[in-house]
Length: 162
Image (cartoon, rainbow, N blue to C red; front, side, top):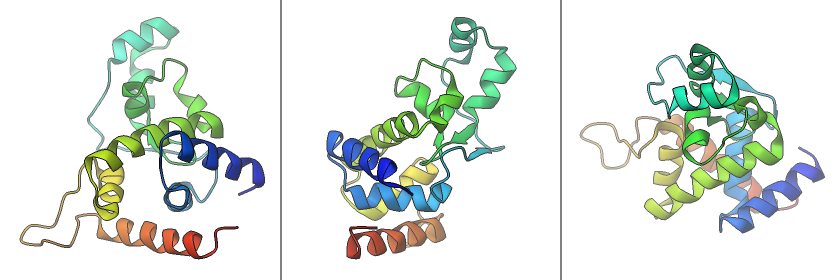
């Protein structure tokens, strides 16, 4: 990560009233601070108006559906989630830090307002909801992810200059 990325994290964290250390922790966990990281999520089943966007942008419908089923950029925001949050441009632009952080922070802010508990917010950012293991009040289905983000959060919080 460099000073330009940190400045963007500071800017979008402030814009959406987010803890910048949480945004940093998600970036570290999701992409290792690699802005062009992309991953196809084969089990993803939520698409947002793919026909509309494929026609508007001159993209093959199957391609639009595939791009909506990928996570993109520093915060690994899903293409369909970014579409839902207002991304009308080409989905690969989410690999540009200023675009990916904007839409990732938008989604994180919505979840932060919905779930007042940071662990619930982190779990929901990764799996769409704060889903817990059945018969457990404390363990999430994505517990390893939540633990990693919270560990990275503690590192950034204790070393704010990082």
